[in-house]
Length: 174
Image (cartoon, rainbow, N blue to C red; front, side, top):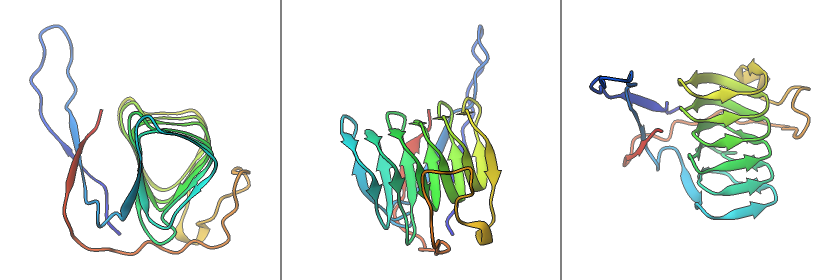
């Protein structure tokens, strides 16, 4: 399984305000199986289901089930999901109004907002991220939603595979 790597950069202190270090996230698009993009300005109504990872810059009114084989979902700063997010790994920088069920690693970047419960295999919360709901740790043997996630039922979850190295894309976190 590929981890989401966060690299911190140092910044100079400002005289009248306390500065925070900026973070850069290195994402291997091919290894993370990101094959689809919902672009900024796109508004979609209905559930979205796919076998690979995806990047969401637009608005989706419906649930997103991704990475049935493998993959990472990036909900960018302009991205908004009004529904559940279910898959193997996620980097959330935008907003989700619904439950999140990530059986691997989920990273909530500064400015990320989740209005719902978060079920996770591993979680990283950055300063400025918000969860307005409950948090539940899960294990691989528990990799299906619990009774507190009423919107979806997963009958079978395959463990993530290690796709290996590839090209890298740099995405700046807010």
